[in-house]
Each structure stands twice: as C-alpha cells, then as structure tokens.
Length: 389
Image (cartoon, rainbow, N blue to C red):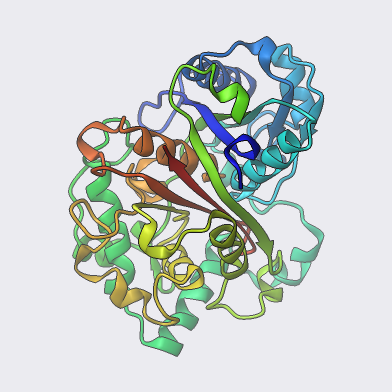
C-alpha cells in the first residue's frame, strides 16, 4: 500500500482511575468527552476537525455502559459525515480502526474519532445487570451457565483435556500481566503476584480462579484516526495502520465450532497479509486477556505457536518484562483495567509503546505492534498491525 493511501493513528486519550473508578459523579457521556478531548489534544486537532464518529459500548445498561455514536456525537457537538456503532464486544474498536481506514480511503471522512466509556464498577452494573438480553442465549441461560466466565471456563477445560494445559500455565499469564502492571503507575492492581497466589485464589468457574479473571473497573478511551495527508499536520509522529482484519465464528458459546480455536486465525491472517509482515517482525503484542485462557487460545490462532503449545509458549515468563515477546505491557485486563469492553485500551497502549512514551515499561526500540480484540464468548475477533516510521 502506498503511503498516501494509508491511514494513521494521530492521537489517543483515556481518563484517570482511582482504585478502578472514575471521579465520583461523572457519567459515561462525561468520561467519553474527557477521553475524546485528551485524544484530540494529543493529536493537535480540534473538535471541529472531526468528521467521522465511531462508538461502541455496553448498550445493555443504558447510562452506565455507553451510548451509540449519534448520542455521543450530539453530546460532543460534532456533526459527522460518517458514523458507525458496530458492536462486536471487546473487539469492536480494532474493527473500528479498519472501518475508519476504509471510510477515510473512500473519501467519506478525514478525521475519525473512536470513543468508548463505561462506569460499570462505580455502578456495579455487572452484578446488577447480569447477562445481556440476547435471544440466542436462551439455549445457555436455563442451564445455569454464568456469563461470560462459564464460556471461558469450558474453553479452558477443553484445552486442558485435549492438550494437557495446566492451571499453572494459565496462571503464568496472570503473573506476567501483573509484572507489567507493576511498571505502570496507572494500573489498578500493582501488588506482587505468584503462580501459587493465582492457584490459591477462589475457584470461580472450574478451572478458572478469581485471579484468572479480568478486573471489573470503570474506564474511557479514545483514538483519532486520520488520512496520511492530515497526519502531516498533527502534533506527533503518526502511527501507521499497516493491516487489519475482523472475523466472527459464532456469538453464543453453544455455537462455537471448536472450543480451542478462535476466529483470530482468520482476522490475524488478513491483517498479516495486508501489512506484509511476519511474526518475527512483531515487537509488541497487545492481546485481549479477559481471562487467562483468552491469550493462550489467541496466540495459537494467530500462529505464534502451534495448537496446544501456548501453555509451554508462555512458560518461564516469556511475555513478561525482559522476555523475548512482550505482551500486554500496561498490565492488561487482568491487572491494569477492564471496563467491560477492553479493546480500545489495547490500541492506546500499542500507540504509546510505538511512540516510546511508556517510561519504565517501555519496550526498547518497538517499531511494530500487533493488537488483538476478542468480543463476546470467544466470538468475534479483530486484529490490527501498527507501525512507526
């Protein structure tokens, strides 16, 4: 792809959390506005420059989990020429990068703003709201399957049965995430964590323990995507979108074709082919980690290791600080934050790593990053490959 045909991420922004919560009294719209303002300032752009708006949120709990793009645009005082409220769970925002790129390349907009916000911890929406009212889940709910941990528990159990994966290997993922979080002043959980700590935490849904599960926090984030021409006028050097792909194998877990294989095999293949890079070119991995089984399945689907080998692949803290393949460098959803849909924060961290803005946790000379979002019950995946000049 010629440089003039490419698009770039020009700005990212998020909001400060204290013990996983936003400032008391702030609504979802308010924190979305704060994140959007931060991202636009980061890019050196103004609100009036935005002509594309892409928003996803936890629509199941209005006022707590987010609003469609039309509502957010109205609140921000933006009248976009292009709008998108595609919602495929936590992978929505990686998909939005691809949608924004296509819209910019088609001349439908020039500056696209992607926004997410949630106050689920402040409002305790996950415990109050329960399972979202999706029709196909009528085949799971009557049997007592907890959402979403039940689906991930079944996938982990199947992977253990089929490949001999162990609880200790799952725990390695959580320990690695915590080591990165200890280098991130903004992370929610920064205390020491061992494999034994994970295994000794309460069993939530066999074989997943409490510390195999992501955090429940508030959060808001925003990403600004621009044309190559517009990138020249932005405040910081552009982070180029080299490739992107999205795919979906099912929505409800009862329809997942194989509990050990996710659609990241397809979305990743598309992104790698578009980017024209190989696995060896990737310096940083930002992989959705809703539960410790999620990155293991994703690493296999993306081709970083063979099926069944991910447990051994992450052994000896390979993905930790100082390891050969840095992964989830802000602490991930397991230790940094997880406001219900985490995908936008993977993009924000990847951009900051490629810019060299991450301080103590900075990966040396990071030039290329792969970002993976996973939504639903291992249902929909989106992959972006980003690079700097």
